[in-house]
Length: 399
Image (cartoon, rainbow, N blue to C red; front, side):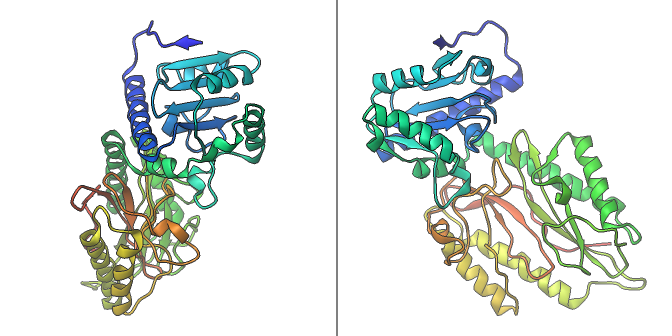
């Protein structure tokens, strides 16, 4: 067993990492007490659980690990001895095993005797479904041997909120990710011209990410997703097609900043020679999306359910002569698509994810995209409404 002692001075990054972990542990303890659950258990091996960054500072543990946050009392990490550096200073008690992980795990369960043990599995939310079938068998085998199998339950009611309720430090990182993303959009405006290909723009943005020291917030092959109005937009790699005068250009793009993601879309129009404005149809579609997003921000406040925002926004878009089939918005955080509560319609695809209440600290995209046109904004729910995480696009970028 290792209790935490500091022998070497910490770097600023280590201090910030430990502060984030302390915030999430405190948040989890509050939720556990509110819901009458004794223990939140993350049972992991080889980085198998997407929730690792919420219960520890890193994203990967090699050996079998049991990370335990209790409603009351010290937090416990049971890790392989070669993994101890990943959790040092982040848990009150660390058991670093050399051979058998079961012994310290069983001893902790006997000593703490939790009446309920919440583990990371879910039928409906990929983001909190980290317990693999093999790990389930290992875990239930131990619990059965202790007569504790009936104490196991899903941690989904805890973990969806641990993911969703961003602390001030987490919100600041998402805001910074948005700022870098917008800066790269502005850099694109400075070089955009007919004759460049979608791939040229993509490669330029990759270079800018390297310059700013950030990484794409989803698959690099299509982040950024650069598409002209002459082909369908979406999460698709860029083509070699040349951008022409008279084209509209849409870019869907986000970056990771210190482990947190942005997800924004911006829209440009390249005028033909002698052209002074934008095609009225494109202008109307853009104005509809912009105003639909504004409507969403007026509806968002604590206590409102996801579908209660989606429905009037979707109806407004329909009144303007358009439709869209995806959700109005999804959560952002450690991932660009962060799972959990969704601002979307009540249907089979989204299920219970749209019926939960919006709460302060939740961060969402807003993206009622129309056909092959799209703008996407990022917001944070506040005590009395919501705030932009970056200034929204209010007009088409005309070149």
